[in-house]
Image (cartoon, rainbow, N blue to C red; front, side, top):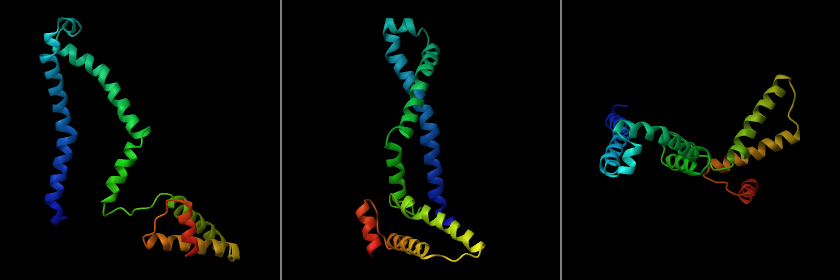
Length: 163
């Protein structure tokens, strides 16, 4: 940690600045500029927003739900967040990168099989030929992944099985 102390401080500074400080002051700046340079100069808008506090209160009531909705859409209804997470993972040295589809093709089936065979072992049952062939198939998929293979289509899965 000591060798990374400067980078950690720099990272915490950037997060504090961009997430909290800059956001707060950007909001204050936008409200001040739009009110005193635009609304105050237009009589029709000045009738709707007689004071700066009225403008801020009405803006918050209107803008906050819009921004919450936009944030929700960003995370839940578009591919934007998934793409951001993918980009962040590409350079994360602490994250093991799984190609798409392998959680369904290899890892979850492996975990399921392990629990099934633990139960069989606990009951003193022997593995049958089908179970052994399933284990070998999962081993070949895991070996293919460990060697740097990626699976994006069904043909690639077939290639992993044949190797």
